[in-house]
Length: 220
Image 1: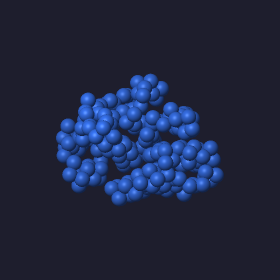
Image 2: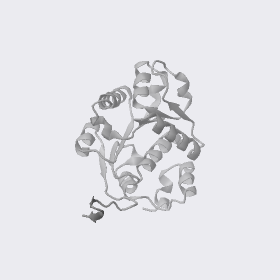
Image 3: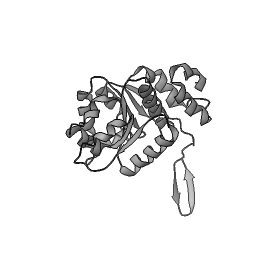
Image 4: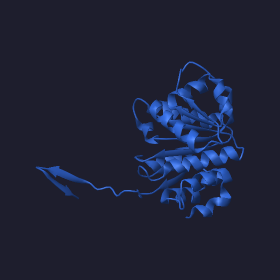
């Protein structure tokens, strides 16, 4: 699918961002996401390899929904370092969006975050903001959950699961997009989230597996 094929489906500012990146065609998982209802507000579970283009799917959903006036977006990540990295990327790539970072004190409302269109947050921080009844939470429409496979992690999984459940109960309408390269049971997760499942095995660099023994490397 060429980038021009979706030109009329996304805001001009978003198209210009991708055009400046010299993107002329969508990657397989991105095309599948579009066909699965990405631009129609459908919930998606995207399970594809690392570097296959999952972040661009999230970017398209966040920017389109914000610019269409549907509401704010939250991008949930597991680590503060990753949140800071995503914050810097979005600030640079999308100057027409107001981007906020939520990784600090867990015992505060941080109502100033409501001035932003897109908030990058750790799961623990967003969970705290909901429990402190931050006023802007009700204005969220797009929910991106990165590294969703951590829902099975014994220490962090319960927070992610409860967070998703609270957001689904609090928000009158939303689009939820779960991203991961390693979900063990994506069909079950998609059923729970009432989401379309996007699966693909394409990766930009072919992955080989093999064994190394006594100075010899043998690929399978």
